[in-house]
Every structure is written in structure tokens, then in C-alpha cells.
Amino acid sequence: MNPTKKIIFIATLLSAIVIQPASANALQDIQQRGELRVATDMSLPPSGMLDASMKPVGSDVETAELLAKDWGLKLKFIETTGPTRIPNLQTGKADIVISTLSVTPQRAQVIDFTRAYAGLRSVIAAPAATKISDWTDLKGHAITVTRGTTQDSMLSKDAMTKGITVQRYDDDATLVTAAVSGQAWAVATSATLVNQIKKQNPKLAFEPKMTLTVFDLAIGLKKGEPELKQKLNQWIETNLKNGKLNAIYQKYHGEPIPAEIINRK
Image (cartoon, rainbow, N blue to C red; front, side, top):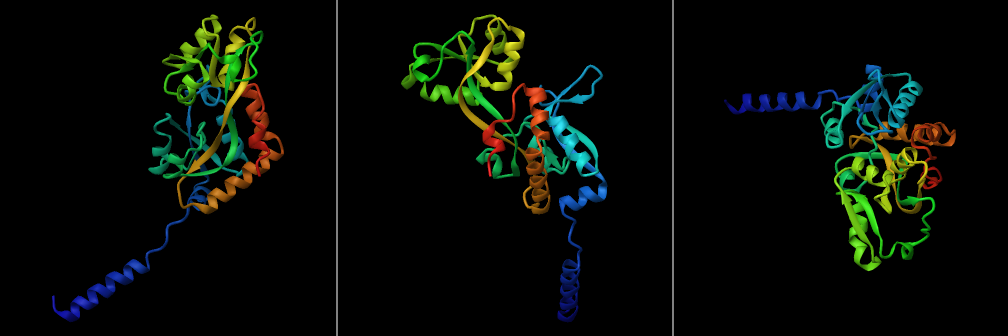
């Protein structure tokens, strides 16, 4: 290729690159499509589950339904699992994630989060008759946890200094069985799971005794989508103030959204 033709070729290539139209942002894509695609795990009751007729129900399901209704959009659930929530978002299969997604520094490196729309209270719980008010009351006792959970990590770290023993089960179902049958003196888990234990054995009446921490549950979205994030944050703020999100949470979790979430500025 002679120099003149080479210059013309390069100029043509550059002009083609420059005039490529910018792709629409995520919010515009959603509005033009008229449909909101939400990744939600349907195997995490009471946040996401399928009823007897295989219809999605749960607190995250109703949250997504309220969002789509308020925005005048059709709603499409992208069924997901815990490990695939973020990949479904990154690959464009879902527009947002509403699926008990807690905010962590590691996740914040790869996706963006809205402000919290709900919270997950991590507690130490025991039968109503058991007197527990602080760590000294736990000394010399075994606290039951689900293996590999944040509660397991938190208690294992300080077990020696606090004088407690950590008793582990491989899944939540086994932990619940141990508590319901009276095998567990106390458990460290989510307040939501404590409510399920109480329902299965009202006589023991397991109840939260101490709060370990409150996890922010937020909507996940791709990085670099400021318009979508701002609109979502405005929607969350409005529906925390008017009580609609709290009503949904109370309906399924048996307690209100933690005050730390609602009162946060």
C-alpha cells in the first residue's frame, strides 16, 4: 500500500471509530425494552421461593414486583443461585439483582450497590427461658452455627477469648432441627431463621438475645450506570419512608427492617 492510500485508510478507520454511536445506558435500555429483568434466587425462603403452583413469592419477589409496577414495566425474573447472581448481572442476562445480596468490599470491586433496601440481622438466639444478656452469659456453653457462615467465622475467631465452644452443622436445615429438638442450647444465625425455629417449636420459643451485626441488603447493578443507580436509590428512599418496603419485609420475615437501615441517611 502506497503512503497516500495508507493515510486515507487510517483516516477512514479513525472516522468510523469516532462516529460509532454510543450505546444506550442501562436505564435507557430498560425503558426502551419496557421490561425489567431481575435476578432472584427462588430457593431462599422467605426471600425467594416458589409456592405450590410454582409461582414466585417472597420478600425479594414482592420488592421486585413493587419496583416494576412503580416504574410501569413488565417484570421478568431471572432465576439464579447464590454463586450466579453477580455473573448473571455481568453478562447482561439480568439488569439488576434483588436476591438477599449483602454488601461486601469484595463484591463492591466488581459491581455497584444501591443504598440498602433491607437488612439481615445476625443474632445469637436461645429459648425464651434462657437468660442471655451479654457475652459473659455464654461462657462455658456451646453455640450452634451453620458451617462456613459469617456467624461461624465471627464466633470461631473469638471462641477462645470468650470461653465458648462452636458447634457446627453443615446446613441451616440441620441447625433448625437441632434447635427445635432441644439439642442446641443457643444458635448464631439470622433473625429470620430464628423465627422459623420458633414457629416449629413454640414451647421453646427461641428468640434473639444478642445482635452480632446487621448486614445491608442492597440491589446490585453493573458498574458505570449512574442514572440507573440514582433512580433506584430514589425509589428505595421513597419506599422506606412510606413504609411499603417495611411491610413486605415484616410479612415474610416476621420482624421489621432493622432500624439501622431505615434511619440511615
